[in-house]
Every structure is written in structure tokens, then in C-alpha cells.
Length: 474
Image (cartoon, rainbow, N blue to C red; front, side, top):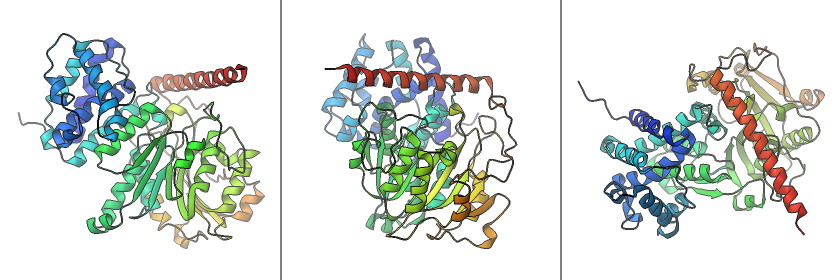
């Protein structure tokens, strides 16, 4: 029987199946991915020659060759040492405050040996990053993990990057970076559209901020495996941590879903509109964080388009400061674990007194769309018509050729939007969706949605408890 080629996809599937042995320890898929970050870094450092950044005695070979009775204790000691004493700051960041989910040395040995027997030599450097990204995508597909909240489907990410057209020399930022998908896609796009000489002469700059420590660790690993140089910060862009972020040429983001500002820390100052809605806060951060003439694409739920009160105020400021030239209505099922409908807003920051919104185009990709999930994969082909009609990044007045208009793609003037109460939830096509949003979902998707809602409720209770505790202190 011929040997199966060790492609990134095949290797990722093989690594994923190793998780089955951990079920006896009660380890979830999400925990498994986090644990793999520790192990894969050591293994890949051995394979690509970067092992010199690791201290002697704390490398992959030292883990594989250990034959004592307490492998788990030895492993924990290695993690702690790498997080505190490695000379390379990047290594210390990946292993900072390490916690292992393994309970038994036997299961740890199975994973180590499984990784060690993979033929990594057939892979290119790009292949290593593809493996890790495939594992992150696999994790996000599991409704029980809740990982979809920080993983944006690659097809959507690549489509957003394609029409946003990041360039060499630009500063590209994601203030809710998750596992780094937008930044990695942007770098791939730039390398594909610039010569190596042009890239080297004027390399792009990347910045990202992530609030959750485990996801931050995944992002660092993802950036490392894609051989990128990026300033990834552990922090909250809705607090004064945002001062560490620079004015950007391009901002690409999928802020976390949820209606409440999720921190007991003081919110950042400088916003015109005060709100507890995280999406509205992130939207303000993004249009204030752009350089004059800078452009942004941000994924936001439907309520941002129609919410009254502070929502309307934020939309008015957005359309005054920026040219909100395009809204892409996304189909349901892309972020099924959250049970929300989403859109992508594309806008350009004005320069001086010019650049405000004159016309906004809306592309309805939701009406008549299939429900995407495990049975129906979301691919870039689904966005092909949108990309073709979007054209080059629009000028501030948002003019497009007449042929851009279609049944799905319509333009609305600023006056028409104002007459609609500055409500951007403008529809002319039927969604063709069931009134019962749970009806099209499979049982595992329904249970995932329930778990997500329970986690969100617990988070809000914890935040309220923290605030009450602080208030009660003398």
C-alpha cells in the first residue's frame, strides 16, 4: 500500500485524533489545543533549527528521552523553567504562567510519542503554520468548546483581506486579535502581491491585542509558526491598555460577542459616546484608532445596525468621521455557537473636514443562503460575486460603476439613511429563515448554544461580584 503523503491536513488530523486518549482525564478539545501549544513549540523548534533559543536540558529531546517514574512532574518543571528563565522573550511569553491539563504520565507519554513519530521533514515552513491553523479551525467547529468566539472562518477572513488590500509598509492592527487569523492572512496577501525585495524594503507592521491569556498564547504560537514579526499584546483594548496600540493604516477585527463591557477595570477615556455594549465600544475604538485615510473592516452583530439610543449616536459619529461605504450581511451559521446574525462594516477614516459618508452600499449575502456548518463548508467561492462587485477599495465618496448594482447589492444615500432614523438594517430581500432560530440546528449545535449562554451568564455574574466586592472594600 502506498504511503499517504504527510500533508499539513493529514498531519493535523493525526494530531487531532491523539486527543481521544485524553478523554479519560476529562480533557476538552479546547484544553487539548492549549496543551499542544507547549508541546508543538518544543517539537517544531527541534525541526526548524530554532532550538538554540531554548535552554539546555529543556528541549524536546529531553522530554522524549525521559525515562523516570514521574514524567508529568518533569514536564511541569520544564514548562515553569521555560516561562521564567528562557533567554528569548517570545519563549517566555508562550510559557508564561503555564498550567497543564494532564493528570497522568501515561497519557502524556502517548501524546509525546505520537508527535515524535510524525514525519515532519516533508513539511515546508509554511506547512507548520497550516497544521496549527487547521487544529485551531478543528477546535472552533466543536460546538462544546466555545472556541468559535475567537476564531473567524478562514474563508471570511481571506475575503475581508482581499477587498481591504493591505499593502507593504502599512501598519495593520487587530485590537481583538484572537488567534491572529486576520494578521496572518494580511501578511500572506501582501507577500503574494509584492516582490520579496519590495516586502523587505518596506515591511508591513503588525499589532494585535488579546484579553484572554490562553488565546493570547495560541496567537503567539500561530504568529511564530507563520514566521511573522508582530507586536502581540496581552491586554484589553477597551481600557487604557489601548494606549499601547498605534494609529493604524488598516484595522481588521471580529470583536467578541456579548452585550456587556467585560471587565471590572476602568474603561478607557476619549470616546464621545459612553456605553456598556462591547461591540459599540470596539467600533468606537476602531474608527478613532485609524490614521486619516485609514481603512477598516469589522465583524459586528445585527443589533449594532439598528440599536437605538447610544447605538444610533455611535452610527451617526461613524458616518460623520468616516465613509461607511459597504455593509456585507453575512449568512447565519457562521458563528452558530453564539446564535447571532452578523455583518462586516467597511469604512475609511476621513481627512480633515472631508470623508464623511455620502452613500453606503449593502450586499445581502444572507437571503437564500444555506446554513453553513459541518455539512456545508464555507469557502471563498461563496464570496466571489461580492469581491467582484466590491472592486478596488472605494474612494471616499464611495462611487462604484453602475454594473456593481445587482439584486443583492444596493446603494443608499446618506439622506435615505437619515430618513430611516439612521437605522442601517436596510432590507429588501427576504431572509427565508424559520421564525424558530433553533429549528435548523443539530442537537450538538443547540447544546453548544446553551453552553455559550450559560458561560456568558456566569461571566456576567462573576463581573458583578467583582464590582460589588471592590465597592464594599473600605
